[in-house]
Image 1 (tube, rainbow, N blue to C red):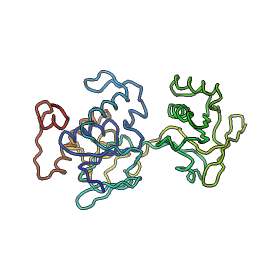
Image 2 (cartoon, rainbow, N blue to C red):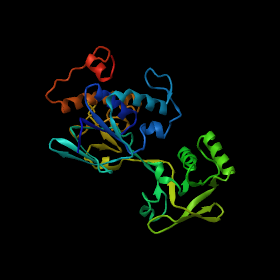
Image 3 (cartoon, rainbow, N blue to C red):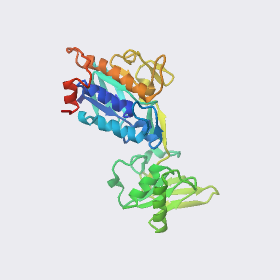
Image 4 (cartoon, helix red, strand yellow):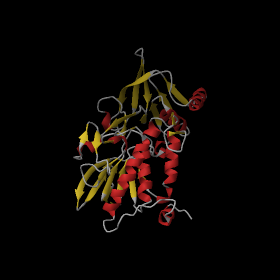
Length: 337
């Protein structure tokens, strides 16, 4: 059981800034996110597109904003539990008990839900009984590339993830890249490198094909793909990597007994607490009169929520507001001399 002052659900910009606001108050937090990297929608939906409404930053991409926020919270040495989803939240001895799908357990007086419009989950292959292969021969993300060495791998998808992993895994495995269209959506320089490898006979590209059938008992042995004209091909396969994008689901949050308004959580705008004491919501997932779905609004929301978190985590201490420019305590926490 891990004890912490705050559990933050969501590692997007709002969740990351919550770490900063809690950290300068001396509170320790952990961050849990279903994705394999920090950044939330900024990374998944517009990593290279410009954002123009971050105060004092005329223009930055989603990736640049995420990188700056990660740099900003470095002094607090916060643990990010990525590729992990909160499955259970329950009240326990005046605190909240939080358990993830990976079996990690936390005890905390405060939870901040900064999960955007829900957790991102991979769009799964649309074949019957696919579940028996998932996690053994079928994967929707690469956590440890060493596990994919010296394999016959079929990669499905036409975006950056499919292209990037085709390029990377081709260094030590036999790769077949399969896409339902002739055109790819990924970065041109990556596609050029892949086409070069295809020309050298180091990888195989199959377009326009889709998955028709999987053969194997507990593990994949081969697959059959079919093109638009009904032509089929059978390919010896050990591993299937599927990168068909992400879908957003509210997930278990909908079952936690919070006041829900459609797919958002109603909060008190004075401190962004939900209908459950000690559970807060900020960012796109929260709802209150006058709500604006802007990143800067989320920053404001976690700033106020962090004050209430301090009061709950330090009930015997009086909260004193301090400016970062004049507080030696805050500057020490930030590692400033």
